[in-house]
Amino acid sequence: MDQPIKRHSPLALLGALCLFLSTIEYLIPKPLPFIRIGIANIPIMLAIDLFPFSSFLLLVMLKVIGQAILTGSLFSYVFLFSLGGTLTSALGMFVLRRLIGKNNISFIGIGLVGAILSNGVQIGLAWLFIFGPSAQFIAPPLLLLGFITGLLLGIFCQNFSEHSLWYKRALQEHHHDTP
Image 1 (tube, rainbow, N blue to C red):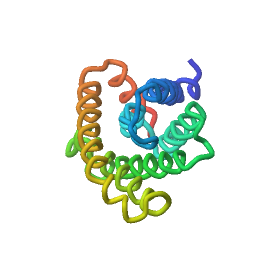
Image 2 (cartoon, rainbow, N blue to C red):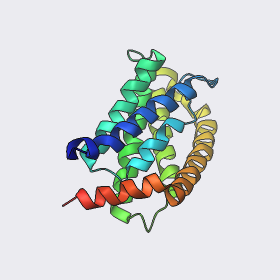
Image 3 (tube, rainbow, N blue to C red):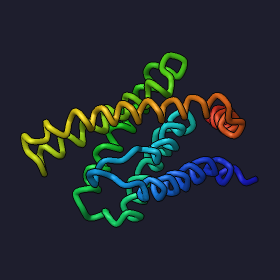
């Protein structure tokens, strides 16, 4: 197989998975428009160990913009919440995993950090643009839900990374291709 195609196949697969999971997540009823379970972040979390920063960021932007197109929220405040929360959590998870190392922080820890960062940014944006000081009332349930979903997504990613032959092969190929 041609090297550029082979190198980008995991990125394309995880990008498609982000869009698929975004579509599934869109079908789940939400009490507020910007509250999501976050299952579309699973490919983002798994990509942390697979890609260099530029490819990782491309995947994050594909997820955010693709999700906004799928949900019809590209030119709305919901997009701003998604962009702010996803970028902050993705960057935080990526930097933390690279600084501390994957042997010192599991996907469970990464999932919890990502959820808290995302929710923190969303609460800040809600304070600034929608609710003002009343945002303090949505903070506790949003943070609790984020903690629970971050934990569950982290457990899933940890289990997947330990048992998936595809993921193990992709990691080996990535580390073989990097200089």
